[in-house]
Image (tube, rainbow over all chains, first blue to last red; front, side, top):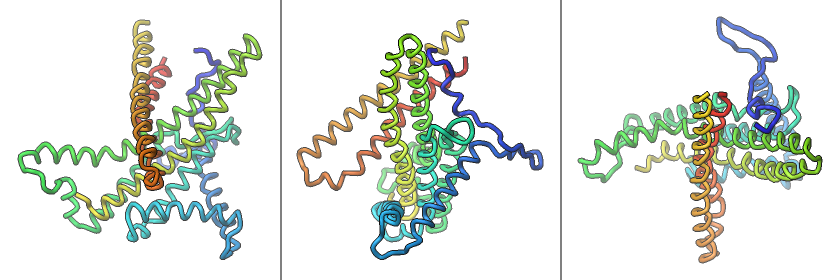
Amino acid sequence: MASSENPLTQFTVHKIVDLHIGGLDVSFTNASLFMVIAAVLITLFMVAAMRPRAIVPGRFQGSAEVFYEFIDNMLLENIGVEGRRYFPFVFTIFMFVFFLNFLGLIPVGLTEGGFTVTSQIVVTFALALLVFVTVTIIGFMRHGLHFLRMFVPAGVPWPILPILVPIEVMSYFIRPVTLSVRLFANMVAGHVMLALFGGFVISLGGVFFLLGGIPLLAIVAVIALELLIAALQAYVFAMLTCIYLNDAVHMAH
Amino acid sequence: MEVAAAKLIGAGIAAVALGGAGIGLGIFFGHYMEAAMRNPEAQNKVKINPWVAFALIEALGLMGFVLSFILIGQQ
């Protein structure tokens, strides 16, 4: 391999404070640190931006309102007026993923370089499982056992049902997996690409220093793509949460 | 030795998945552009959705990419 360092080392989790409670390893790691930073940043941003409470918002308040209106519109378009009830849930998930994605793009962090929490399959799977369990509970609360009709599409001739119902059940239970792997794979792929090109700068620059400029230009392009991907994946995560919520609230089939 | 070689070959094969994602994105954006050009008034309605589709298509290719890196990283 050309790079001097394995591009996968950036994803290792270090312990900052070693903690064990009842045989469980609950150490404070760099992943936890970045999650705390994200939570604090989101709180500070929203509280400070909304402090003026102006009717005509300034730039800072406007930036917070953009986030609010974005999620509000998403819920209105996908679920309708009833979707407003789930605004806090979707907004929290969107802001958390959004801030974690962008924090990961900052190359200098507090613990040996930046760290992308969303590149950990554990974190994304926990988020996706939270969405999945919440949506399932909402579905059962609103429709009772009728929610199970979701697996039996209406207007289908009965001989096909033995094949169709298992497929529907499977496509329902695969949701948390695809939801988490999508975010995880995008983040890992992007950061591996950055690390690889970073390695090329060093190894090519060692041959002839001007050659190192070529992968450096590629890094600029990849960073631009990653900025798009970071926002897009947070958007897609929130969007799919809305679509799943709509399934549970309205039960299209 | 042979296992290591097989892993590298497997990593290469796994990365082929990105080619499929590339074909899919090409087909998708081609059709999107065609639709947008033929009916510019409908463009506002479908403005934001292409990015969702883009992410959904790309994710499938990236799964192969990640798999190939897992195989390389296991050396």
